[in-house]
Image (cartoon, rainbow, N blue to C red; front, side, top):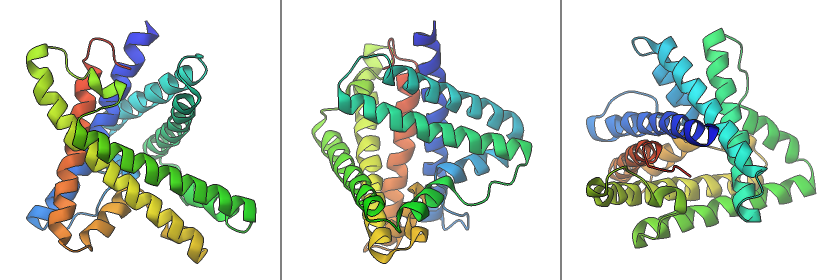
Length: 251
């Protein structure tokens, strides 16, 4: 029962968050909207301020909790290699934190400084902590480059290969997934670079998640066009996650 329910609900919720990030960023890039570029946390805030925002956020928060629980179950299931289980564990922790953010919004609790920056600020003073942060940045850079390569070549990870329910829609879904995965990889590379810079400059405020990475891309050569293309890719990534949620056996 859990094998079928948790990933479906989880992928649908995460897909909505990524689609929201993509839509907000695309509006800024192509329409000149004055919205603030949203990352994962910002996307929850955008959803919360929509009509029926509390209901939407309750549903999304529940879905994120399901996704976190599903990745935790996979971590301790004994299936998959060490790298797979390490990735599932990190994902479980990350989406648990995002679930807490949604709950804090709903309960109007003070959220304070983001937990990732607090952790980085505590690690920076110590050589071992800086080494761990450099390793995390390297992982972001490598996994980001791998995602771009998978998107370009079409050699998608197992969880994306089964996206979609009917064979007739599978080819279109996989094209969307390739574009989305490549865009997510580009964002990961930028995040890794910013983390390395934060360690070099001894400043945890330089760490950025998806929203901050999109702002950096908007300041690159090509500016809004680059940001807009990546934004559409993140929207595609969200759509691909929805397709995974309705696939026969979501991974």
